[in-house]
Length: 378
Ligand SMILES: Nc1ncnc2c1ncn2[C@@H]1O[C@H](COP(=O)(O)OP(=O)(O)OP(=O)(O)O)[C@@H](O)[C@H]1O
Ligand SMILES: [Mg+2]
Image (cartoon, rainbow, N blue to C red):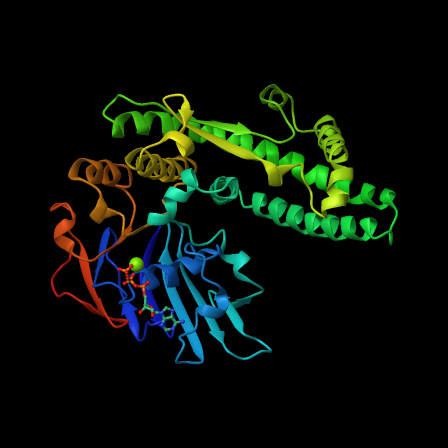
């Protein structure tokens, strides 16, 4: 899949950006704080995912303006499509999303349309950060393969909100404890499916990460991922995800129910899962060096891209935000080799830090405006 056109106006500091990207490499060059990442972000929001750097939607609109628009034309193996994302400061209808001229109810509709993977410096948080970062990574990656997963996650979150509200009601004596039953049954149904899907994705990505990490470390180190479900043991996943799994999940919720009521939040289930990431058999989070952590994060993202490629004839678009300047030549080659069939957008302060063979269109950005360098096509 490639982006054939991007028009961005009023998104953060960007104004009047109108580019026709190269099908291969696009190098966005500029000093700090000129809007390089903003360009990637304005395209990324068309993927139906939350901002990769955690921006809130209300901050998409330029501080000095009252509306933003981001328009993308994309091409995959089947067709050309057009996505328009607009926001205004109007309270009644702040957001409007159109796909091929048809209004959509929300960004979710775009999830299956525009697929991209972003590599950002904060990716190290997948390794170093809280368990939630690892769960989010797995959930997002698995959802790209199977959008039904998003539905299960959002249902499960909604049920958890209801359950947690109910826990407080019970603690205050306003509601009887039996009222939990109906929510726990639903939570168990969704939670079991999510656990199985996480297990499936982690076993899939584990093999690829192992191979890639071995290569990037010069054949000397092992990377291993292990899913620590809060409910199921590894052998449970050998059985199908059916009534028995739901019962097991339900029983687990019951185990912590008293404590949950006292604290007003749920202490069992998928929101307590962990993904153990080990380098040479020990926790990368606790013992990894900075270099090991960076490489491990990079490898996890590359593995995500590789799985994606295997499953779909349309490769995702790749955004490399500020990661290339930090990698030595052999690591850069390693990355470019894996994403060699994908359209790539690279942000960098100084293009001389990039491998000489990476040639494509160069877009210079300054103060939120973009100028394409003439004759830079690869
Ligand atoms: N809502 C907004 N309205 C206007 N400007 C904004 C808004 N949000 C962020 N900015 C501006 O966008 C600029 C940052 O853009 P961006 O993060 O894309 O920079 P960058 O070129 O990637 O820089 P770096 O090299 O430091 O990563 C800053 O000047 C910031 O003030
Ligand atoms: Mg940036």
